[in-house]
Length: 118
Image 1 (spheres, rainbow, N blue to C red):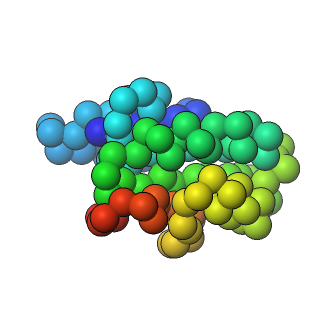
Image 2: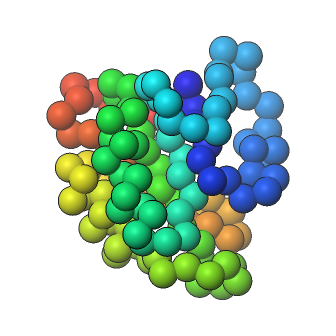
């Protein structure tokens, strides 16, 4: 299951056609193999991060996206506070990548899980 949370308009279309076996939700209730959370405020990210960790399926990944400075989206986030909040929640950070011209993201995994495949 893939959870796309607080996505900007049109983001789901950017993913293209997904395999029929992939369930996409707009919340992280239950377990998710992949969670993508678009954050614009540090306080909201800090509040929600522990719940996202609990929602990760074994081997799952949490991608936290924040607006690039050039996006025009109001935010108090950059990589450093996103990383800090994830590490404080007990997650390990890894890959950093651009989602598109407006959003950057970092991948977190739960180090207590045996494998992280996504």
